Picture 1 (tube, rainbow, N blue to C red):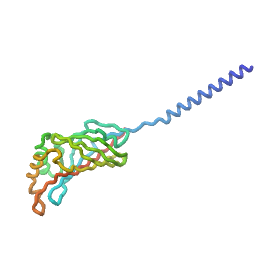
Picture 2 (spheres, rainbow, N blue to C red):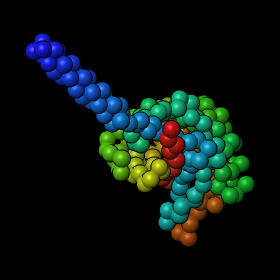
Picture 3 (cartoon, rainbow, N blue to C red):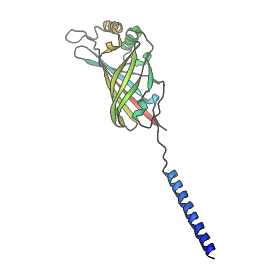
Picture 4 (spheres, helix red, strand yellow):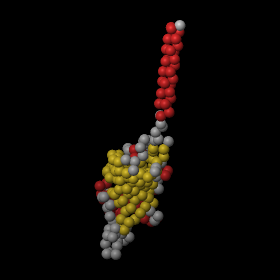
Length: 212
């Protein structure tokens, strides 16, 4: 009789122990979460620029209407979607709402460079979090790759980037620059009678993110 009672007690302990293990396993499975991954939505992202003319530094604004991502990146962080992201921009997509100006720039500026079809580049060295920070834009133009410091801010699923090309001559474009300035000499002449084309250009982009 004692053996029977002992055997029953042991069976009960084993049953309770198994129930606890099962409950623990189920609890672990319940806590497992699927982490969202972010990537840049090319179709909804834009690239714009502001160049300057006359000694008064009057801004001339425009955009590139086409953007191609050449190695889509998926990241668990929003800012990480830019890390090592590569892109190509067709020069033909240059648009400033002025057909005469656009034709001149495509032909007499980009058309004089070594590489006349595409502007390309990529991003790296991100420093910041999911609200703001800095990133380096490596921009290739005229066969030369130059690093341009950029700042970024993130609101919801939109990354806004801003930076300045401080000197276009870093891309060795003296011939192309002189060609454009000569063609636009009168239009770049201000009230002081001086014709000036600035070598700095403000650039900005809006990268819209998609998540899985």
